[in-house]
Length: 230
Image 1 (cartoon, rainbow, N blue to C red):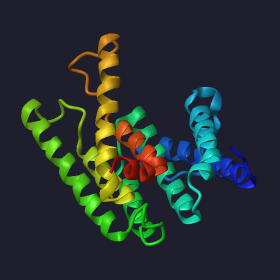
Image 2 (image 1 turned 90 degrees about the vertical axis):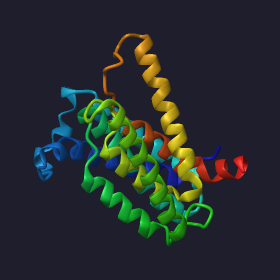
Image 3 (image 1 turned 180 degrees about the vertical axis):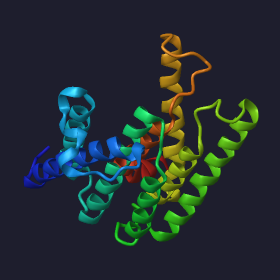
């Protein structure tokens, strides 16, 4: 494993991305426009989240050039990952996935499908992947609400839109794996929380974070994973 100047450059980009993610996570819930001098993200002593977001994003971005060696793939997947980290933070803290974030990510992914390599994505795979992701999770959302009633389950329309965005980012060939591992991850963590009695069966846990984590994994290793699996 050899580190180059690009790794350190991307670590700095990760720090900047982490700061922006913290600011947006603070201001999106109140629908306010981020004002640089008033960023609550700079008041790090108030909570641990900014440390974790900035540090985690910096480390992840530092490693990305080792996994994504094609420049176009590296650039676009870095942007996608930053968006998914923002979704993880807002879903954990506020149980909200914002339309403006999902729509921005979807449009960016459609544009990126023209530039990344064919094993990553293309416009046809992106469009079909988006449709598949949306349909699968809309059906799950519909059945969950029919069975348990609206508002009584964790799965919401934000998760449906997130699945659409992930489908566009990952393409048809990877979205099934992302949704599968997202569901598995959510189930395992929910089971652990139930067994430890930190939550009850009536607790509606945010689900978007697990989809986003699975999406990040597929953005980094998905192309190789699909080739090995198939």
